[in-house]
Image 1 (cartoon, rainbow, N blue to C red):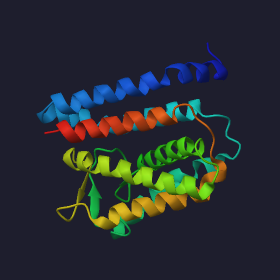
Image 2 (cartoon, helix red, strand yellow):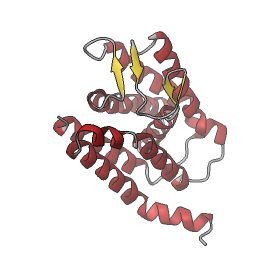
Image 3 (cartoon, rainbow, N blue to C red):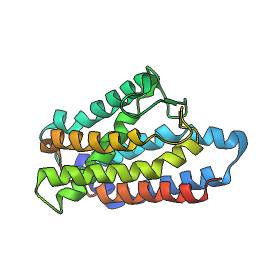
Image 4 (spheres, helix red, strand yellow):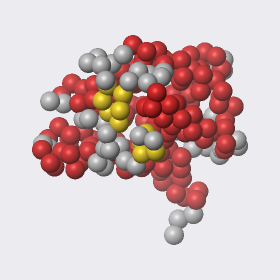
Length: 215
């Protein structure tokens, strides 16, 4: 039986392939399946996000400030819960049941999504600069770009629905501002992770491909 160090080593060597294969299967499933089979397949989405989070957590360097490191999970979920129930700051929208168990109409897995994206962008940009404000700004812009890729796919797959026809501008503004603030507040909890660039490449590619080819 492998110990913790061996498990981490295995995932650091092969984790990129694990997340790439799961997202490739996911993309093919969304593109090739139709009707009830497509709906059933979509219900696996939160499990995929959970797997991604577990791989990322295992491959991280030693976390010296765990509460600060994990804080984006709570921040992301709370702001989504506020947004779902008040329309502020993103605009009026509602989640379907596809993303798994919900609390006050908000899927619990969303906290993990905020966490893994913020940590991945922050890690990548931290390797380019030591200026915390610049890193936070770059992370905000990266999160904004990722949301631009995510929105049409999420709407097409009925993960969530906007009250208005188009995605409101305040959604994108809020994603940038909140991502900047969350990153700046939790920067001292950041640790290095070799999976960061692969998370962004795989997720970005996943949503770009589906955005182009999804019916």
